[in-house]
Length: 196
Image (cartoon, rainbow, N blue to C red; front, side, top):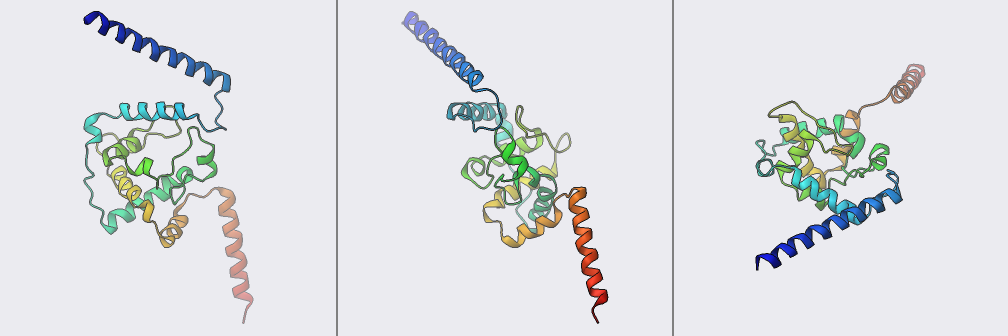
């Protein structure tokens, strides 16, 4: 009995090893470009590793901030200023940066993100994810801003057009955008001064 169990274990390990080697060979042949979506097996393996990398006690943490309008507003404002460049104001990930990252930025409104626990979302925001574009944010120890972001992520599927418009005003702007806005403002002021 033990002998057959040993053979099964060795056979299982050999199969896992062979599949790993096959996956590595296929990945090398395809190249490590960020231009193509990963094959299904690679996405599956990456999600499993992400899940395993989050400690159980972190997964079970509950958000200490209730979803009050004030906390949601703070989370929305922080998201607009820090996260929207990659994830888009509406959470779709359809930004120049988000579309060109590998692995792709997830659509935060969809089931894949929304089914994560609050603790998992917090852990990902706070600690980042290796080998992706997701950096670690927040301060060491308890991070209130990241918990407020979790509140806002839960709200994303219900985001209104008015909220999104508010967020656009808070998005970081580069020098070119600022110059265009100033030019437009100067033009409008000149028009107002010249009208009777």
